[in-house]
Length: 113
Image (tube, rainbow, N blue to C red; front, top):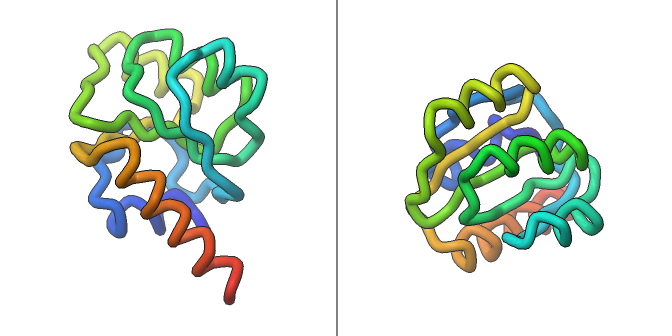
């Protein structure tokens, strides 16, 4: 499944990044040091964090995308940094729980194909 597949299905707003990037899994977390040591390449990372450090962690872990949940909004400098580093930032009004549950369903669908 690609980022462009989840955007309409989850009702996400795309701020930056590669919509053709493949998603292999999902990681949920807000403690950035923990995410750095546990998130995997090509996963979708769901968080409520919206500061500049999210871009750094996403870049280091090489996640496929970051969904900033629960209506949290990054400042313009964060969006510009994400664009410069090629980090895919997505926004949602949904709760972290809801997004994680929906992503789990989408990933199961993909595995069943």
